[in-house]
Length: 305
Length: 309
Image (cartoon, rainbow over all chains, first blue to last red; front, top):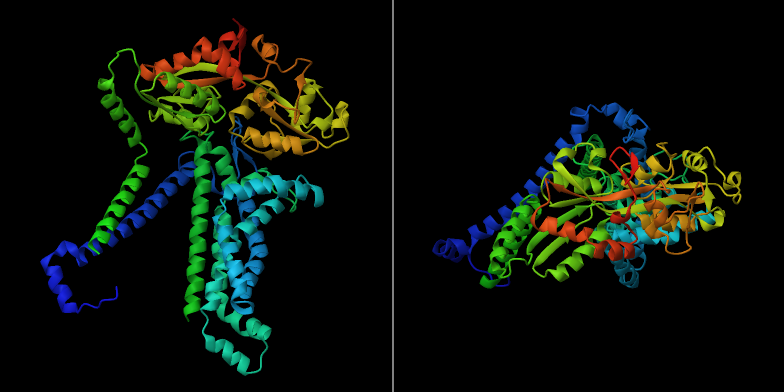
């Protein structure tokens, strides 16, 4: 790394043994890129064809699928395929957990970068990294053993509820949102110094200068967290109750797209209508993750301006 | 530097291979067959079994089949049996398309949509009995079938209507597509559609929820009634015991099926014969909480018609 070889010598060397230098490196990284791209494209195509089959081949109405609240695929005489309660459940847990986790995560990020950059960071950073490392099944199991009885005993309802799902997800996406720390500490120093020079206090600086300056990055972090919440299956499935009715309040049991897929996928046979509708739910998840990515792209393009 | 580059190339190749292996799900059977051929000539004794067998399907049957496979492999050290759980639907689909040799299911293949049941051969290896289970605080041990239907369809909402404690009834269901749910609906609820309730797939989770929630009722296989944490219900005065299932008095039970595509042959046949042997049927099945299929005094077809043997 340290040694600087003049361009001329490098060229000579690559002429001598072409496989030893530039070309080989180029081929290696091109292979990597091609694998990544083809994996993504083939997953998208596969999910697209599988997910559309229930509408094209099995004649399930797209409008019924997206808006009806009646989900009854095993009723042989009159099967109903309304996935709206699950779509609603997915969005409800995602947005509610973002509302809970965003202030917490951004607050933690500000604490780490502005209030106590030395010791605060030393404590909080490992804590956040630990949260990332805990597998989602463990979150779910703790939720089932601790959170569900707690909600049942102290808040009400059965314990299996939208609320439990939101709490578990909030904790799970906290680390993702706290990555906004990097954006905060990357802000140019002269912003802070300029603000202090104008006589602003530390809190005024944070509130009026730093947060607005870092806002696009903060929002990107929140959207990333939401994308994770939207796709999480295991932990949510264990605490949300998986009821196919629309929840009327926070203490009602509910279901999400991911929990219905994981609950039913193994029991259904390939090619059956029910299996295909599960793929359609998977397609909705994919489309939503594209939407989240577009949102992130939009937010980060604003940051550059 | 040079060695580093070689190393990176190796790593990349390894990653490629993993990728290829992950992609080629269908190719794995070819591999097993190849292995089959390569190991067969090595065996000296003709009677000794060798090769590999892949089994997938019902997660309820997985512990039984895995335990049997382990004993089978101890007796035949050259045999390799892979037992995967994935659900009855997965098992049936995979055996129908030939990617596994044995597919386990807790329902008849005829009951699942999109399965060529006529190509599959049914081997009933065990029987499992199930019954409704309630939280012990409910204070009920016996229930009439008509009341059970009313409980599960939401027509009765408090246990005091049935002489129990003044507790709200909380239903714990299985997913729509679950075999356990299908059996329970058919034979305990006479085909009635249960009302909405908490839905969980795993029997252990269902047991945990029933135990922790006041007024909860769900359904479990007999093998889960090992302690006092949940109370199994008698139906119409018939206790949920192995004897009552075998004599046909207790209605809620199901076969555990192992399906093969076409007649079983080779290793698959040897393993299925092993599962039906007295040794396994009387000892291992009992340990795992299943009932021996060989002791049944009644039998049932795919449509649910029952007759005495």
